[in-house]
Image (cartoon, rainbow, N blue to C red; front, side):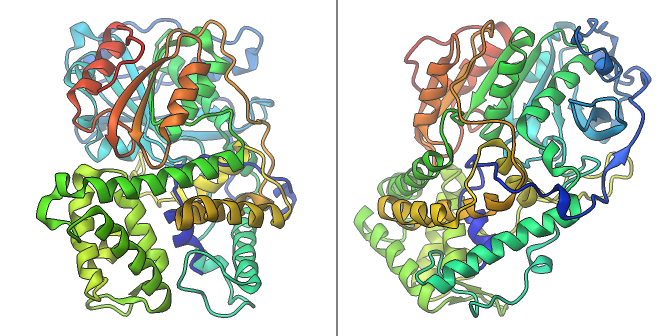
Length: 540
């Protein structure tokens, strides 16, 4: 089985997590850097907002060893139409003075109305492993409303270990770390059907973990969300903001939630769109996410005619479901040809294309429909294109050279630290059987993605309900047909947060803000700019 393709197809945005066997002893870390705590750098320049006198940043009174980090002033310089800088944070917040650090790339788009500027709006595009730098450099400012762009500097960053972070997590490629499996040739299907195939998957997952340990063992224990949330507070202070204004999509909602728990008095406004529920354990997340993807494909079958019209691959919802089921069965036996290539579309690649298309129905359902129609005739070229590679890296802040995309590695690295997982393989096979029974191939693929966490380092967090006394009202946004972060998670998170406000978008797709719904965008913009509350039960 193609472990990497299966894992990517198995819902990259499902938050999972930690594990049991420490990897630090498995090999030396060759990427850890040592440096003295940062000195104050030059003040920001060349920005319309630089003339605004920054407020003295709050510092943890009981942690004077963090003072140098909190007093940084990023040295912004032009990088195209944006500005770039770096931020230095301690690698280990328990020992911030030991000289080990992460250097995080920053990018900002200055407020278009400097006179009305409120401050900075820090955002995280999701993942875990998403690059905020790449998001903004690739036109991500368009995700925000005009009023928000006018009154905030939009600030993106690469979290510790991600993309342009120095050091960054390096697990090598799957092809580099894998060896021929004793179980025989890789299967075409997503779901293992024999004990040998299960062992093949287990061996592949363990090899992936070992490859990460060999390259990055020294930093793997330090890339979890609690440390990233502490970095957010250092960033807030370095930007000169007395309180944080933040927007997180998908995994970014969990980062924002953890920030709110750690620093409730330092939050001004938090928007959490596409929520992750921190109270769920790894099995609950798998089962809920598998069901959400299955529902999303049903929503596609039901809504195809309204969205794409005559381009639908069949004449009725039932016909679309039958066509998809037939393709899953046939590609497991005989993969489809791809024009001009020796590559083939097997069940793994079909699953990858189908699940990816569920994220943005307004832009993906039509090409998916055309691809399914061609696949039904025996040609997998369009499906292969839909399942193609991810976006490139963010670009090195100093040289502008492309930064390797390590989002796959960071997906495991963060997930496997944030929520405990068992070491016993049987626990995964038991969950696989249940998930497959409840949600078919969608549940099974989600369960198999958790195998990577079996032998990763332990994290310090456990599933829990949010405790954040003093946190101001937080806006949680949920989409009823969200395939990756189920709507039920948004409902649960909003209920856990003190003063939590739930804004609902009825419809398919992953996350809501910035996708063109005027009702959602207006409510979020009003909250961010004027702290306007959202009334209970507000639905768009």
